[in-house]
Structure formats: C-alpha cells, structure tokens
Image 1 (cartoon, rainbow, N blue to C red):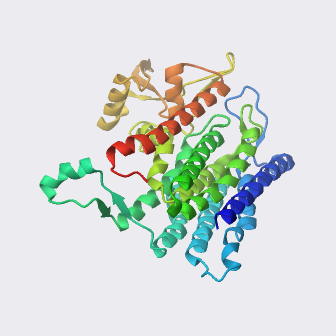
Image 2: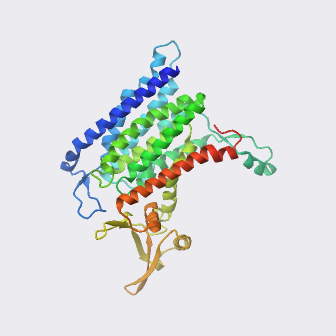
Image 3: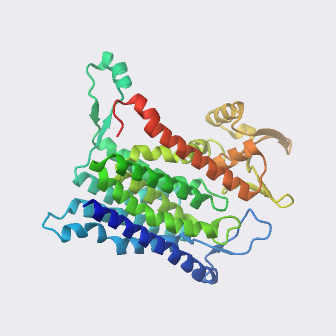
Length: 415
C-alpha cells in the first residue's frame, strides 16, 4: 500500500511538471490572441506601458483542471484492483474539490470581464463552498476543537468541569466557509505590483506542501487527508511558477482576478480536505494583516479611491505611497479615531493642508503595500515585490515555529 502511495505521488509530480511546460507554452501562444481580442490592460506603475494581456490566470487554471482530470483515477486504482470496498467518501471529496475550485475560476473570469461589485464577490464564493462543506459533513469528519489546558483552568471555576475537546458542530462549518471566502478575496486585495499575487501564492502553497509532507511522516492515520491536499497543490504550484516567470517585473502578462480567486479557493480547499484549516491561518498572516489594515477603507470609515496602487514616480522610476485626500470635517467619529490611533502608532502617514480655503487631510491608502513603503520609503517596483515576498516567507517560518513549537507549550499533545 505504501509503495503504491509513493507511486501515486510520483505520478502527481510528473503530471504537475508536465503542466508547468504546457502552461509556459500556452501563455506564449495566447499572449497575442488576448491582445487581439482586446483582453489587455496597462501597467499603471510604468512610464510607457503597452497593452499587457489579461487575465492570463485563466490559462493556468485550465491547465490545472486538465491535470486534475488526468490524475483523478490514479489514487483509486489500488481499490479497483483489489477486493476491498471502494472508498466512495474519499472519491467524492476529491470531486468536490474540483467542483468548488472550478466554480471559483468561473467567478474570477466573470469578475475580470464584468467587474463585479463587492457584494457579489462575497456571495458567489460562499456558494462555491457548498460542495466541499457538504462532502465534509456527509463523510462524518470531525467538528471538534481541542481546548488548551490553560484556558480550561481559567474558565472551569466559573463554568464547572470543562472537557478537553468541544464539538462546535455547525459553527465549525461557518468557520470553514468564512475561511474559503476570506482566502478567495484576500489575495485579490493584496495585489497591485508585478509578481505579488502569484509570488505570495507560491510561498503559501510551498509552505502548505512542506507541512503536508511533515505530517505524512508524523501521522500515518491522516495519510489520505494530507495526500489529497498534496495532489491538489502540486499542479497548482508548478503552473503558478510558470505564470510567475511571465508576471514578475517587468510583467509581460497580468494574472487578473481569475488567478486570485483560483489561488485562494485552491489553498482553502486543500486546507479543509487536509484537516488543517486552523493551521492555514498561520500561513496567511500577511493577508490577514492586509485585510485588517484595509477595513477602515473597505467599510468607508476612511475614503477609499478606486485604485489603491502605489504611486509611480517616472523621474526616479520608483514607487511611493498613494494617498486618499478628503475634507477634514467630512470624517465621522469612527474615521477620526482610526486615523488618530494609527498615526500615533506610526502605522499611517497623516498630513493636513489647505485647499480652496478649507482644511483637508491626506493619508496613505491602507494596504500592507503602502505600509511597507511607509517604513522603507520609495523603492523600485522589483525591490518592493521582493520585500513583500520575503515578508511572506518570514511569516511562513513563524507559522511553522508556532505550529510545532509554541503549540507544544499550550497543548499536551500536538498532532
């Protein structure tokens, strides 16, 4: 059985590498086709940018779906060649992953074509979660969370004896659904410079793959869960690397919202089916930080412009912070408090000036990209991307340290 699992993993790796070369070939072939069909954009962070094909992420997503279709029967050959009962639950779980991820690809492509409103961007990924969550429920997978001994000792005087494990039932499905919706949109809003969308996805996917291999070595009882996560992520990683070679500075293609939705859904589904949805958050700390930092603008506490990209200076060929400008008296109490707190913590650039005899305020747009520029100052676009990807890598290392180091200090047993 183990030998056959290794063989299946080798087959997945071979198909994934093949997907890498196919993806590179198709991107080259379809680049002029996209431009001819007017499916192209312009790089706002370049002095003289010609049309750049977009959304090229659809090519990689189609290659990934093709790889998965070819690979689909291979993990289950061992049951077709023996008298053992066929594992329908595992097969349906694998199929549900393809359905949820494919629907996210469709949503992303529609968004690229129609520029969907935010309420639709939240609704459609929610519907895309249903196949995975339904199979998770029908398969009888666990909805139990382990309570740390320290927490139990704190609350037990007030609530009585507290069990070591707590079945949160329906709320666990709400959490998994929220994880998918967040992942699908988090990469989309943490974007704007060449190579960042694909680069961060590559770092997270590689981290999750490493985690899966570590868990395969540590826990044989969870072998299938981590194997299916690997089967989903291997072709995603190789096709993303192919796309990154065209999207890194200076970008020859744009990935579009299609890639962002596909990447977010793929990572979330791999975590849910791999039974490490809570650990996944540790690898998404920059995305979580970007979302939390963006909340005041996303919820209109602070004025939010149409684009929050860094500001390009053609003379120095560097990127600096972009700003939101507004009348100082137009902010409500919540907005004033947010700006006051963040500027006092040196997490926001705040500047007041006079315009047409009135008092105006200028603050940097609230993204981690602009926050990085606040700390390091104006830099070249390639340098900025490298700094952000290094930040992603550092937090992945911290994620492993927390998962296997700090957790052992909080829990009696760390699986």
